[in-house]
Amino acid sequence: MRIVLAVLLMSCSVLSLADVQGVRLWHAPDSSRLVFDLNQEAEHKIFPLSSPNRLVIDIDNSKLLDSLNDLDLSVGPIKKVRWGMRDHKDLRIVLDLREAVEAKSFPLPPNQQYSHRLVVDLLPKNDSFKPLEITKPVLDAKETQSTTRDIIIAIDAGHGGEDPGAIGHGGIYEKKVVLAIAKKLEDLLKREKGFKPYLVRTGDYYIGLRDRTKKARKANADLFISIHADAFNSHRASGSSVFALSQSGATSEAARWLADKENSSDLIGGVGGVSLDDKEDLLAGVLLDLSMTASLSVSLDLGQMVLNSMGGVSKLHKHKVEQAGFAVLKSPDIPSLLIETGFLSNPGEARKLKTSSYQGQMASAIYKGIKRYFMQSPPPGTYLASIRNKSDRLKEYVIAPGDTLSVIAQRHATSMANLKQLNGLKTSIIRVGQVIKVPAS
Image 1 (cartoon, helix red, strand yellow):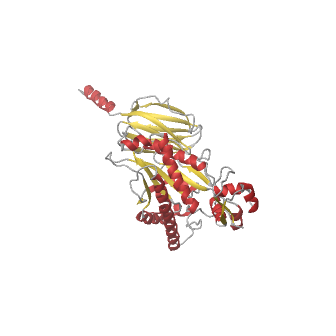
Image 2 (image 1 turned 180 degrees about the vertical axis):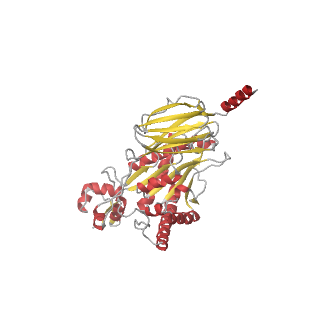
Image 3 (image 1 turned 60 degrees about the vertical axis):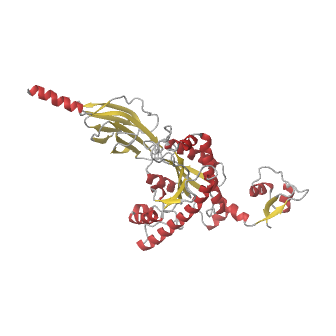
């Protein structure tokens, strides 16, 4: 009887083992993420070893159903993966590392797409790999007169990696659609003199919401745009939208920043590029409120221009910029917009958003709205501001019979190249009656 009972207990123990059904590895520019898919929750622990550098992952009462040989180890900190069973019941996985890492792990509960998961994030301890950072030159009053900078646009493709976002009609993934649009927008801005795009997410990996705005701040962005594609429980919902931060969201975020000294000391934009870490709470509160009010005002004005431009490509869900408390919009010193390009749950919009041509149209509409705003209101010290200052000292000239661009340039003490730039001319061909801008003196 005791033998039978022991056998039954052993059988129950075996049956209770969690299955590690698969492992996925995601690489970001500044981290790598391992995700273990399990059929049930399981306890785990991780610990590092040195000489050589290794990371040990122990998953209690579990077994691996498949090999880990297919993981892409050509990039990132993992050099080799080994695994085996401990005491016939615990799975041990050893990561042989190219360098020491900071490792963090946490379980995730089931969602609509996945069952239980164990996530292990690997971050470098040194500066061996970091995302590209773009910096604005710090100018004094004299330098500003002769030196100009580009307007930096941070483009954030929503979701990524483990987070697919909305899964639309026909199995289309939001994370793929918005990354494609973001890259097309990046290409357009690269070709436009006076702008420099910064792509927050460059591939299929996940970035935390707060980390997205941190990356934009490190890039010294003048504008942060987060691109998404919506979904709803009804396939009839349709149209594009643009969101800015709500007033209540701004108020709560200001309080959070004041309470968080690390964030306050990191505030390098806003009102005159000030830091709040050495200010009294009352003064810091006033400065932060001014910064957020100014950023929100720009967000609303710029967002309306983007929305109007998008209206030429797609149906609009609402004809005014909406406001909500999205976490990615809560940057007190950077004007920020969240753009919903359409509803993936709508069959018609999903089919369009899946095509490269429509993605290009959407990117072009966003680009035109951004350009239109900054041509009218360029930040001080930028190339566009210098062009705007020159245009304020211009007058109109009507082309007369016998005029050539070279003659007009000599007459107004300028160059043909400058006239072309001022008027957006690609060639030197002009026609009688055409109105162009020339220097006033």
